[in-house]
Length: 208
Image: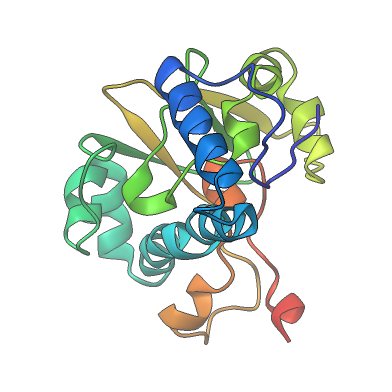
């Protein structure tokens, strides 16, 4: 299963009706020279990878650093996330699930592409693809391996299926050697994929 993170202009099999109409409109605007496809790709990449996931990274970093907030996030994620100002459509009902040495959590939407926009921005193309949506359930360990994540056989993998009513945020495990780091520095270790469960938090030495 490929997991290209860029704006895909060729494979439309995973798109909904409204997404197909948007893509058709985009094609017309490009053909008439009104918009630059490279600019569109850059904009999508910004909201997929940079701007959107920064909100979630702040949530995770605060949970790592503040035990009281971490417990609040685990028991009422919607309110805990809203307290940081991250609210809005696609984030009305949030559930946070925490990775441990014994259990790794991974999020998928098997029916479409439900995704927590307020904390993760726009969903990446691979998240919406049929191969990910099916294989994440049938072969989660194999999918993780394709993302470069290799877990011990003793670690249980639990799949959470997002719906129109409930969306999930994975709290990745805090890397060792980060005890003296500020919340701002901790947030830099949190990746979008680690909050979906298809990745792990960065190691602090990787940021040097």
